[in-house]
Length: 83
Image 1 (tube, one colour):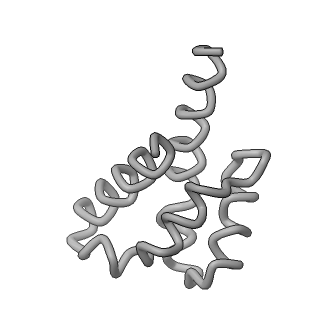
Image 2: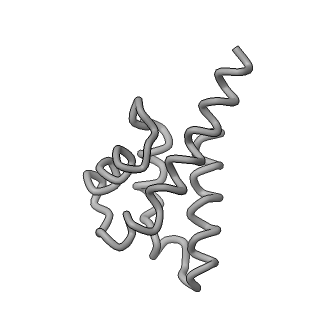
């Protein structure tokens, strides 16, 4: 749930910055699927590939991959620190 919340917040911030509805920037299902089953390595290239596999268009990937990788990585680091 923490990953999903962080991912949604990251996408919402980008959507707001570009004056887009969040669901137009990236499909809610793609955000959920990426959050619930993230790649093992959370760098922007791997997240970009995962987004493409989930049906995101290239412009959507370009706007969101880096922010999503960072958001998911922050949650993973916090979870690791809590262990």
